[in-house]
Length: 152
Image 1 (cartoon, rainbow, N blue to C red):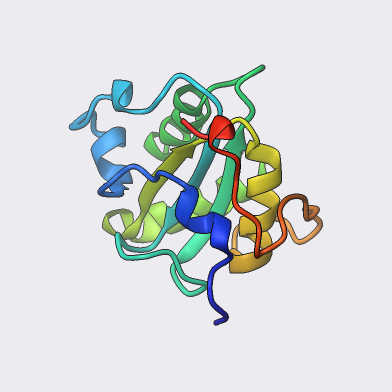
Image 2: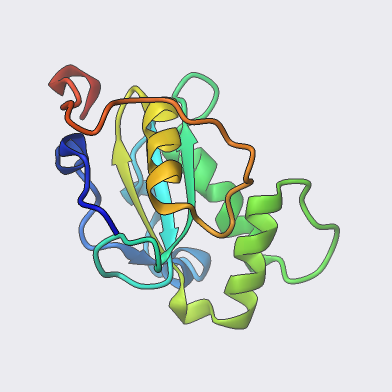
């Protein structure tokens, strides 16, 4: 894999990544997740993000939904083993992974107000298995930095 773009180090990821089972079983409060815009990544482990461990990259734009509300949709679906599947292909892909290996699914997030652009860039970098292949690339060139006022 090529080196990460300069702006990647500007992202302030939650640390450490949280096992999804902790949210589904209410071991960890969802209040840990910010009520703001940002991006989130589901991965197969709690190590540094790579093309081999990133399963899904998503965003919460902050206008219609926050990180906490958006991730709550995933946790509720993971907790519900039966019933009608979601029309969200990425969610169902992650749900299948969770049902097979619940202890091997982690989530992390970073607050930012340019979530759409960063989401597109991360999808381009990691090519996650559960993201739709028609998602567009938006964002920053690899030698740019994300302006500090866009991060929190």
